[in-house]
Image (cartoon, chains in turn red, cyan):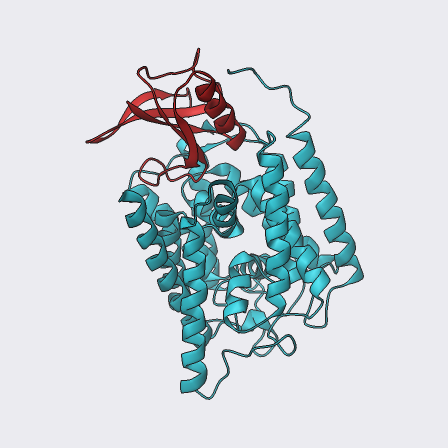
Length: 81
Length: 365
């Protein structure tokens, strides 16, 4: 499935992308889509069979969603975000 | 397809904003200053008595409208959310020095575009410095710079700055004796469109900027990081539409709204080096803040208290700049202002280094 993960920092997104690359999950950095958030940071668009392609969700992660035909399906959201 | 629709929306918003900015000048705002977040916050600071430069004192309804326009649309679209806690004091300091840079150049990134649209070639030096500042900021971004995450806050927190804007509007309309207004003919503070016109313009631009996430800094940053021109296209559209409006107005009216050259420009000086260094400080600081002054106002309207603190930092910087002779004038920059810009670049660099290389980061691989 295709997923999008948003982060609290650009560097957090970079690290997650590298982690995806190491695990063979195709991933790329891009600006956060407007229909996902009103914030304008960096997100990672990745393809994976499981929601989290890394060992665990990184602490810099704000939210992760799966891209579906109906829109975005929430996969993860950081506490108090 | 979604991206194309988004890009078309941003360009359309930019075209509308450019027209609004040009019309505001016709209706009374200073030349090439349909909008200027830095100048308008500075004027508002003066009106509240935070500085005593009598020529720049007026509660600018455009600022009120920008925050409330964003606030209303964010609430309508259920995007309003009180959040903050990401290094607020650091953001205050960054906002402070971004304003010092703006008042060296005499304008924020938004006005830089409007100055270009009015034929002011001094803004080219500002643009070069601005891009350099953004590139420096991006260097730190890609090496780990972060001010930390934001947290959800009680609802009231995010509502405070919008409420303050309503109070400012009341003060503007009531005009009590303790609010300072530049006397007619006394300077840029006395040049303004009617309150209702300025307020509506601010509301429309605030809503458009909230919807499209327009940000001059974000636009150039995204081009550098992702080769993504979407956000920057909005500002190119502002430049194009304001330029066309200025040319039409110059041809159709007795007044001059477009004058190509370096000298004789409105609220501008010709010192290229300091125009560039001032905007370098602005670009560098704004990348670390995550957005230009316009974007900070819009985010504050969405309930982001970190941006609200940044706006307060901008206001404090404006007050400081005029109380201590740091702000430039049409005659050029001041010695104090040059020193303040150099200090500002050093301080912002230290903040960047401390938040890039000076942190132990949790492993999340």
